[in-house]
Length: 401
Image (cartoon, rainbow, N blue to C red; front, side, top):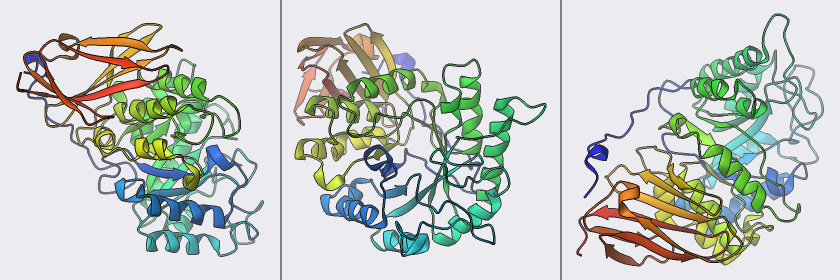
């Protein structure tokens, strides 16, 4: 049975968001973004091919349905009327056509811009004077999701950088609200304050201007060799931000790169499990058609997706941690618990998690979310976990011990 102190907790209730009159992103967004695999080498045909692969692999049907074009999609300057223009060489049909194509495939359309005077790649930014114009254009193109970066935000006399960033993101939120289209707003402001005294303050107000926020470092790019260190760095800064997550507000530790090279099979599976436990946006950045079958199975694991998308919107808490392993527990909306143990070491470890440490007692039904095997226990969860692997279970009270 559940520990008494943890019984009867109702799911969090989301209020209308900062960018729409109705709640948006009540569960963590899922989809695909080009950046960590392609960088600036992005074209219309590449986006279309990956969108098609999301559909053909079945990932789209499992929730990976927002296709986002990141930086470098636009021309180097605005047109004479002050509007953004797609690079005609990279996107010959333009962005309205791309939005229509994605919608026709049952997908959503995401796009990138920047709150500063220029994007990180040096293309025209929305700030400080084009938020309304750009939001109106995005709405007319059928955009459903905006990733707003924070490069080249200019300091303002008499204002702190935090205030300057906040005003820029508030202006974008207002513009999206007035665009006539419900557009999810992915905020990048916290990433520009990571490690500083105002980092948590920025995370705190990000939920008032958007539905998710990047709060730290970019995940390592494709072709940069071993990427496990990057995955664990992002996991480590994100795991302590539990109190900020709720329906419509999500901590975003950056892209899923499972199966994209630079991770072992067990490392890829671990990232999917850890992101699911943290109620993180599950946004794949890869050449989808080339993702290996084992990683594709992990990404499409419906039990893990259900943990990530649980309507209670709670991020897992770390209940035990040392240099070798972390144990995470996530309370789910129906009273179940998800439990994960990640092996940080380079060798296989036998791990045991007492039920008392995860807030449960009595007879418990445990489902291994990798194998689907179901067992009953009244003492502890046990597993042999490979190097950089993660064991993960869903626990229900009242098993048949």
